[in-house]
Length: 178
Image (cartoon, rainbow, N blue to C red; front, side, top):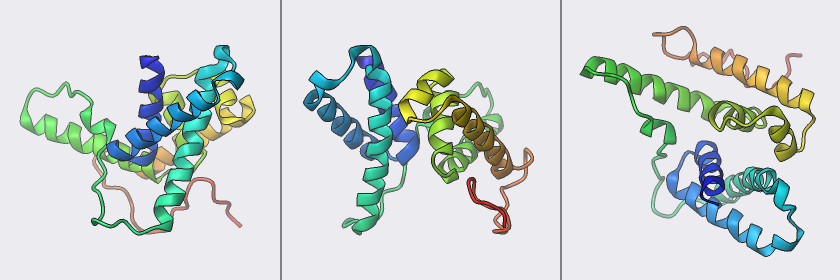
């Protein structure tokens, strides 16, 4: 159960960008599991949890954007910032930290379903079949969305050493060119 809890929290954390929000969503997801225990196929509980987590994150963002936050805005903390660095000297550590920050920011800028597919495949390491089941999309759709997410992520990150473009000329993942 701890592995499932960790997976739910990780998906929520990457999706929402805040540890506190991810904890709230994780708790909400496990309450839903408890309430629906009789209807959940135990062999497919992981896929069910991922789908419910993804939906809960969308609902959470919708609720959060509908009401202004009372105590000012919370600075998002990211799980990627806790990744260990192989850096041995301060300058390498700073570069590694900056790269992690850029990658996390780029992932946060991806639109759905690109963000979820990328997180589930590249960060959580789920196979395509589980992603397909969890997000309710066909296997070819998972592969296409992952390809597009990777391409958009590469575009957002730009060449190594260059800051991402803020020209506004680049389109968001999922937008069509007319």
